[in-house]
Image (tube, rainbow, N blue to C red; front, side):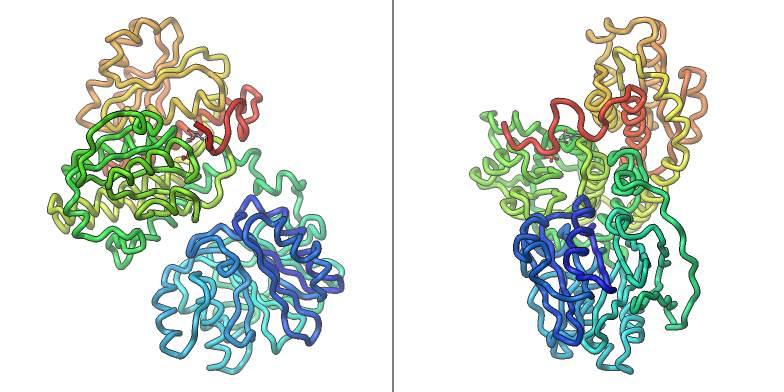
Length: 612
Ligand code: AGP
């Protein structure tokens, strides 16, 4: 996700835009830019790679850019490396149209090809430049009015967008359009403001309008006029923002972690959509060909922490669907083993930050040994993304909380898509099964949302665990992989000791730790292993454990064994991790909150471990 701001009014625009962008850096910070209009003069554009500070220095904190109308942007790269060229604002060939964008244009390649055929040229590799030039195309083709031009573009564009546009022929005016990406419009004393989020304009106004999906607006002379997709004017009433500034940065959530937990449906949707084309998985943006998928004889998955837990889950999914031998290793172990690697193997390195030292070192070792490498990475242009032969970008957006949630969930989606595509091209599944698996994947965002909508029960139960000393998560197969992540979430933000155990392994020693009242959470999403895990839970209960069950709707007989149960919707069992992990993320979060801890910045931890 990115951050956009716009301003037109009586004051100098650039300082206001920079101030607004500084409140949106949590939305993206790999590059930034401003476009400012000084009356009838041509619009001036200044962009800078890196944090917003670089742009502020380049524009003398905005004082070098005169003008009372402007747009600004801070970028989280999705299409195109972080660079000055790819930074927004983007402009049409003759500077007639200048714009900034937050969102993802899914059909940008198709639109780009159309514009190339119409004689347009492109200087960047962004989807936003395509959107701006499409608006310019329609502006020239139709009645030369901004509303018509943008409306025609909105009809053609598929994806999500919050657009802020200036037209050379309309000085002092800003036009905005929205679909799915957030946007808020403020009006105060003859000044108009636009932003991706409340914090950017809270200093200037609490009098705001919420623009709806597929709606447009014109901001000029202290007034806002709204339009629907037909170009008809529509009435809107302003509302008053009640938040304080700090709360606003978290969009009203108490912590970034809770906000990011709630961003998972969209993050999963965006990541899935990035490789779904006409109902099939298209890995062309990742760079793996069908021939390569058919040729690999072994997969190695290497990562750290939660990313490693994704690897453990994907091992089961790849083995199950694609009958592929898969080995998962902690990066810090992989790099020091004298393990013979199959030269015909694929090494997948999973990393949110793309900068984890052990994971980067493991990637370099794999490349040195001549194996094909693939990074599953969230930060565009990060070291692992740049050095891997191929990259599958997760579209989780910036993840601020140290404890990962939405990045973890989008990494799972990447792993599922790879497994399903491997299975199809290697003839392990039928086309019908392939389609069914894809439709199950497309249900995940809504199913995750349903779990989030029912979070109060988990919050109630978690608050009662604040004084727990030991918490055990047990499961078999994929349920063991889920237990690993649930346990890490619990210990890293609540500081309560926790273990994840393969349920069948408990009786080989660890069960000696079970005492009266020890919380044991049994994860039971795999039907073939359900009864076995229930037995292991009963073994714990007979030694005094307090049992919580985590299973799918319908398995109500678990209530004969567990004292507290959380249910998640049914899905294809190999995708169950994506649903079962949500209650466990919430458990860790609410226990930490109950203990009054710093959820977003737990002690001793860093968001990216760039040291060994
Ligand atoms: C998980 O909540 C932690 N933040 C940590 O385990 C993290 O997953 C690990 O450090 C790997 O980070 P990466 O994905 O950026 O490589």
